[in-house]
Length: 297
Image (cartoon, rainbow, N blue to C red):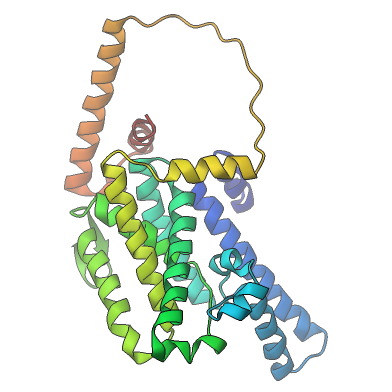
């Protein structure tokens, strides 16, 4: 199966992580193709950079009230756009790794909700700080923000809040628990603020991280914020209800139901023990499927 066919198959199966990565990558490639087109058309390097900067201004979110009012779509467009390859690569790598964990433990339906709501929370927090902090008010006129970092970091912190002692292997460091990765990325953003380089981005990261933390705290208490988001999305997208099908099935007795439930729980417990000892990557495809199905029940 080709890469394109595999991506399509994953998206058809409802894999939200792959869908988000596909959207971000497609937007990046379209922007890159625009620069190539400008080059083929005979523009010099300065003309290409100027034209590309004008494109960025149409999709990046302004941190000035007046400019934002005239470009309201940027509240959404900014967190699907990356101008640099390494910016895209790092964000998508983090999204792939932590997104899979979130889907496996909490269900696939949480991915898009945490990503979008986390990105919006980051954007709102950054925008608010630029309006209230005097040193940033001066900079707001020329400041813009773009990238998926806030949404991705919301997913990272959500997973770290759910599985604080889950260990992963980090190059040149060794095994490290997710809670320490969460602390590290948050501290880096905080101590980077006084440097006044990418302040809007660092503030957005912190806003997204805060959302991810609060989302998971609420989820662990039985309150799933993603339900409202998914319901609203279904209404906006005018999703058609599937046609009703008549299905004949054998009624399950209470004894059979309890037996199957206990059997599934035993399998899940064994898989979780294996994860704690050897890590998620040690699971077979069948074990991952069992964990995924159990998380959606």
